[in-house]
Length: 528
Image 1 (cartoon, rainbow, N blue to C red):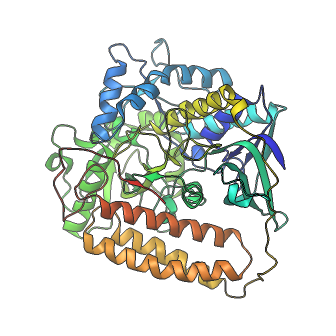
Image 2 (spheres, rainbow, N blue to C red; image 1 turned 30 degrees about the horizontal axis):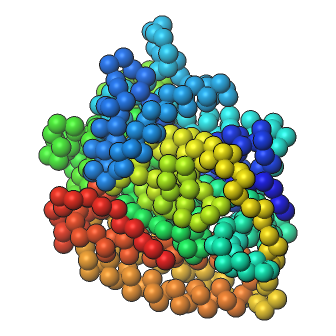
Image 3 (cartoon, helix red, strand yellow; image 1 turned 120 degrees about the horizontal axis):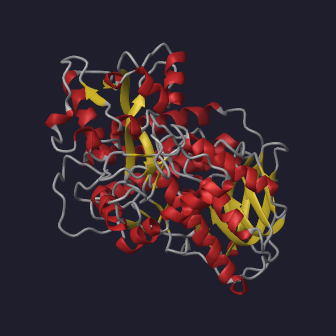
């Protein structure tokens, strides 16, 4: 299938790009599973924007750079922050029902999250991502120039190497994708391709990311020849629910923003006073996550407590209805008792290198959202800047494509997928075993606190698994699980290699072998 523009991913970044292009061009949007099951719909907190009297763009820029440990690109931060209020207005116009100011005030209700110096988080209760996803999907469904295709698992980008007549131009022409419905591999081509596939959270055993966050776009772009950077900066959200049956339920940053306290269940004491006495629970996520990790290891705990019961039942239910309802189903009454929480992988701050137009190194290939490394987040993402990045860079990529349309050549004849040499496998247990092994050693060796020896152990296991997976991939027909395993392994390799390159502790990368932060900050850029 050929269209003007191909978007891989149906979350905030992908749909924003599609909607900004569809008035002029035909756009095909591929989703890995259902159209609404990506990371966007899981976002609880909200979207950061300067809207409060007394707040300024400079304050938001400064907070972002402080959280990012100075590794941010300031021009990119300014670019995103200055476009945030307009992005909120456009979403409201699409029908996102943001909470309005309380007590008859004007404008939106704003909450505050860790690392922010002001209240600037626009939200829809505690289910902002779902409301945004719903509004964008409704708009996309209604547009005649947008074709939405669910259940397509991207395998590899179609590049000049796949042309019937090799041109050597290094251009990206589309993607090969496994069709879950037919069991076949389909080819989608376009003049421009936008990666909006999300992050690589499922590389880790414990993660708040959805099941499909297996680093597909990062791995595909890397294999095609694009640069990848800052993969060592994997954000661990401090407060994921600890529960034997529910493994990835996030307790939003806003609970701490509205007064939630972290308590050691053994001592009964509020412990952030020992780690960041000034900012306490509102310190950036890397600080809070390491504090919780330290308390758990020091006291031999399985979890710590997050307690907001002192705010009263009416306040808690009004501000956190989704969380309250879900916890009630699990037998936890957050209006009367603390919530057991642990850190979990939450966000991939590194990714495919892009400029402020969303362009990658490869002609015809753009990227937006968590799959990319735009310079916004630096060494640690500031809370509620993630959805914002999706809207700003989704629009930026669309604008650049429209402005340079004549420079994008029509796709040439591309070779179809060839699986004539391979057969079905009767040993798919290998995939499950390797998937489990990757996530476990990444959690144990490449987690919140690292050492060179642990990283080298992880690297050694990755090399062995790469040989095994390459052999399996070369001899059997692809399946969704095999595609994801291949991408998980590639993402893990990039994370470990990046971490070994950084001989300092900065932001989300904390190593016991290099505990100091160097004076000069620089991206860790990996080139194929």
